[in-house]
Length: 323
Image (cartoon, rainbow, N blue to C red; front, side):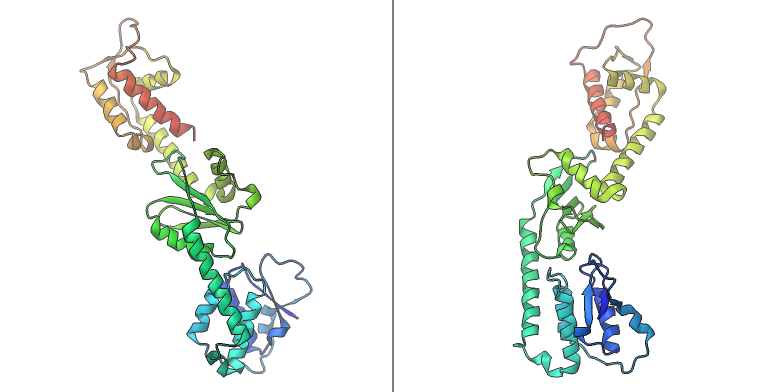
């Protein structure tokens, strides 16, 4: 018994390569055992890739119809572990029984079409039943997270549909087998999230973010965005004048003294930075020019313009650094 090993549950390219080699060396379907990367106890089989080193007695030339290739693309997404054996058996029969392509009542062909229909139905259900949860992770854009448990291995086939529908949005879909995230332009696949480890709907956003970081790790798109925001805030604060930096740190500590703006421009500058809060989070740049008071002065009134704007900026900076 030969073993044909595939890289994943949906390794169509690997299946075609192995099937082409097996067919060229006239290996019948009953002599092949198909295994994916997750299969165990594979030491008792002969690797099918080793047949390439053997002398081929006769290489079968096959003209496979395009309809069968399209059928393979869908059937490999089915959860049936015997799907690869069925497809190779059909391929073998198409080569040695040319009339099979015109026999719609053949049991193997009917079974393959039923499996393809089940996969298409599952993809349609996923498009309608995936519900995203909006999570604020500190960037200008929120993160849409969802957990879905499909019947078949359809996430890789359905992900492009979500990517086209949710342009310019960051989203994540967890499934027990595989997970995917997107920044609105490119997708990143990662291992799945088991149902037992998936957060419940009533759990806080922090639980979902923890699961997100656990699955995608340091390569997560949102993690990279958070790191970029931190770096921009730190670099901008380093470029802030010394007196302005002291004023901001005192405001964040809750002991903001009275300031005497030079030329009356302090309130206007802080108001401009607060109005553009999204820009302030990504590249915080606040310049506060003041003249040092000759003697300690009482605190500003809580309702004053300067106090309100500085408090708002303090909230923005705290939000960026608490991520």
